[in-house]
Length: 244
Image 1 (cartoon, one colour):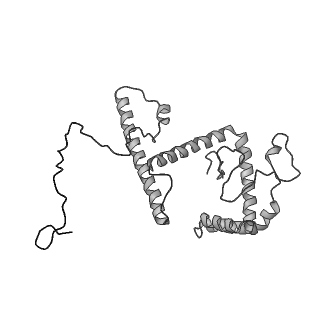
Image 2: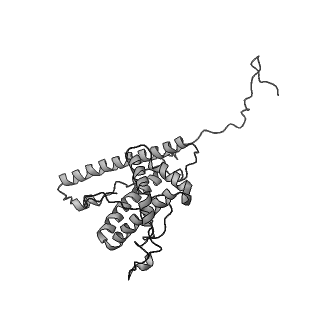
Image 3: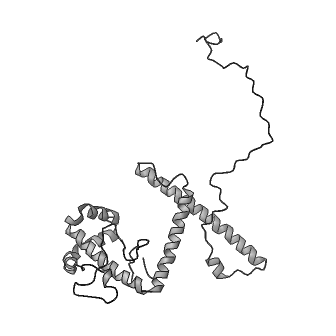
């Protein structure tokens, strides 16, 4: 994630819900935040830390990690492939351990900023709310169930993409309808404040009927049933009912 008020790209590890001191910016296993060295002690937040960052391991494997980063940036390998390979080798792989230590160092620095910067927490909370609102809207549209029963990967991707396509179509429809209403209100002399528009959500759903409309005519009388009609059977070559 980039930070608009910084000149450089700012990596913001993902904060796990309900646990502000535990983050996972990759699929690799990570411990709690670590201090820069074992000798460093803090008066008020020392209990947040455990062990220390292995800077020597990071320095030793830094060229290898840079090569991996360049390969990903050049499109020669995908991040998911790297994560899968590193996760498979786990602690037996020194490169895995180096990435893990680097990730912990980056995450620790971010968490300290997160704890001490109210504006940063507010920005992240707002972005998280937007993402969760979209996810909730998408899940609401996929009313057939939250579990994809298909085992084929191509079919799974289709279900996800179609679900997102439907969600984006409805979001576009909602925005168009709300825009028309806002213009009509302004044309009628009703003041429309910018703060009001900013508080509107494209994920409204009260006007959406997921199951369609079924009209029942209770005044219609069904025809009487003739219980004397015989049950039809197959016919033989002469056109007469075949004998059982």
